[in-house]
Amino acid sequence: MDRRHFISLTGTGLMGLAMSGAWNPLQAKARTDKKYSIVLLGDTHFDTEPASVYHSNYNEKVEWLNRVQRAEFARNGEMWRDRCPRLMKRAQRLITKDTRMVMQMGDLVQGDCGSGEVHQKMLSDVMDSFKEQLGGLPFVTVVGNHDIRGTDAKEVYHRYMPQRMSEELGQRIEKTSFAFHIGEDAYIVVDFNNPDDAEVERLLADTQGARHTFIVVHGPLFPIDGGSCRWFYHGGASEAETQKRRHFRELFAKRNAVCLCGHTHQTEFYDWLGDGGHITQMTMNSVWANEKIGKYEIVSQGAEQYGEMRKNARNDDGSPIKDETPLFDEYRPGLKAYTRSPAAGSYKMTVSKKKIEVDFYAGDSEEISQKFVLRG
Image 1 (tube, rainbow, N blue to C red):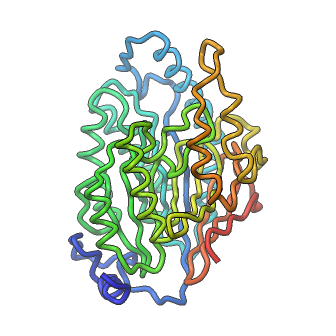
Image 2 (cartoon, rainbow, N blue to C red; image 1 turned 90 degrees about the horizontal axis):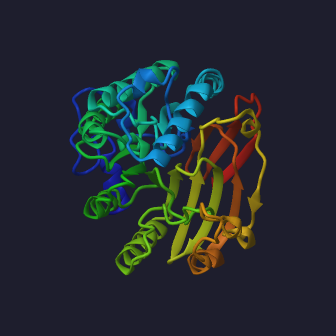
Image 3 (cartoon, rainbow, N blue to C red; image 1 turned 120 degrees about the vertical axis):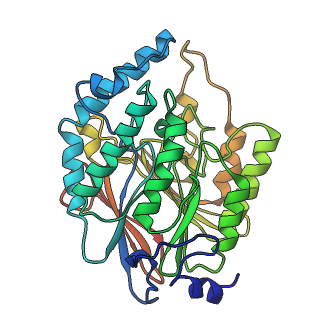
């Protein structure tokens, strides 16, 4: 499908996706010279105090994992007592007349409820709360690993969230990988936990000719500079996963894709040239776990530093972790820009014909903490 054919579909929906009868501004054909904005949130790990509200049925039997996850419940309850509500109020103030939607990068909730019924309540509670706080705009989320974690959580999410996304987007959504458009721009939402390769290839084909292509996925497209460096899209070490990773990297690069993601609890920017194209990745974080990360401070910058932080990581017993230098060496030559910060906050992306920019507001800062130019 060429660009002219894609544009002709923007008044009625993407090929293969049935539209509802109600008119929705997301489905209206946009003028190519008009800019629009989207408010973005990274991981949020929504939770509350006391932990018994959502975790009274929690039943993890492995002692060390039980200890780790209960510490996460305490972290979440504390940050959602004060800091994260402040962050949400800051995000609310980012909404302007040209804001078309709010998008969240997965790990919407903590999970670990021990009950499918409670997990659905957790999802429903946060969707309703965020939507109300953020002006009633369409609210789109991509599935994260915490969103399907716990007893019956995956089944609940796969049943509940496609229906909810259908309501938010005004089109029929049946899977956790799907696509929608804003004007001539394609947004392809990808399930990172259970990649449906055939579906992603179909969505890429159906949106061929889009002005800008955005890949919205919880886990990043690039290896993570940390102990769990393989927890990225098709990041497994097997030969089969390596082939899939390189295949989709090439497909995304040839679309000059912009990746919007989360998972790492970092604010990161990557600009990479390779495979005959261009991939830009913006990794976002809204887990305001302590007051310090409410300020933007760079801890790693430049292609030469990419992968260096991982070299200092250790296993639980203090031994060195596996050397993954060849994996980072594969990406480093094409990396034209790279920054990493532990900062958490909210983000506003502005999209026009020639420019894509993201303004980051650390914590609840009234001033822009950092501007990222993704295109233009």
